[in-house]
Image (cartoon, rainbow, N blue to C red; front, side, top):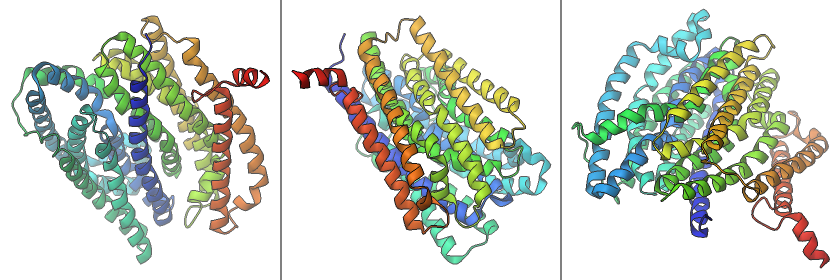
Length: 524
């Protein structure tokens, strides 16, 4: 059964909207981290602050950027289809009310147990009591963020279920814009690192309030749900499958959490891994969040298995069309990217080399992370989270075993990133094999052709990038003016985009005529 063209067009359009909003948030967040590097450097204060920031970032990535969609959207759409809009809003109010009560209790416990939370994120701090104390202090200041942004994410899932993606996707950008403004003010005033980190921690919680306010504003058109503590059969269904679904949807972020734990065994490695991860998250978020948010809603609304199979094939091709060239570019340009963006102020040569090595290692896992994201949506749409949960747990285990097995290579950040990439590969492979075994995914020549074309086009782009890098090496060196260096990096990226675009079009990666057919027509 062939997927109708309007559905494919809607998928691409909605994915572009969510991806563009997400990349805006990531770019603002990236600018934020560039300024954090300037303000804090990569020493103990930076390690403490960035380790504490891992928890809000984890919550925001898992929940604020679509993680709650997986458990909530299928149940919400089921209630709406069976009993109408009013019943669906009532269910949303029950879910938000129960979640809010639970979050208040969890945040209160977190304030008490902050040092243990930090050790759960960066166990290596156990041997550094001063850094541990700083990280615990910053964590306490950031914990209200969890309550506010998780409630916002719960309500944003309702927007996504109604296919109103824009405002929910834009909310994280507002949060990063607030932090970016605070950083600019602190740098202008010459604030000391310890004091600056404390102010930033307070402002993290304030961004959660802004997130909630924006979502409430967006819900005016669909109707605000009334918070309720009444337990219903719908809530039982949500809780019965929702925990496993949420954990499965969080697998990628849990893998990165394990990577942070591994990196914490070496001073400065947490900061290097964090900055590398921020660059890595730019393409991952553009593709992965868009796939996870839009594909889930489309698959949950699909009328039959054939419709889901067609949606899966198109989503996989679209995801890899973007992920393959992004991974290639990150691996080839890791050094120049990190140097131009971060090598300023207290961020030195050693920090650059360590961070660039971690970024190149992360790039290896980017396509597999996107594939795993797309594969998982099939099971979430069917409310069958057991297999994605198993694959996610195995991925976390693989990351932990690989990370500690690679210990002692002299660069803990690179070791942790390699472990994460291996985990993404294992997760994608397990889900893909299961889909093939169960007959849910039936790849054919037509669906695989654009993926192969994207792979070949990425290889062509790699050759061009390596050649341009050697030509522009002098302009990219740290001693050159910033404007020259930024211009050279932009030229490199632009050359890569043009090369990939041309090669991909000729090979048929974007639905254009494949090269052999094009040549036959030209000869005729």
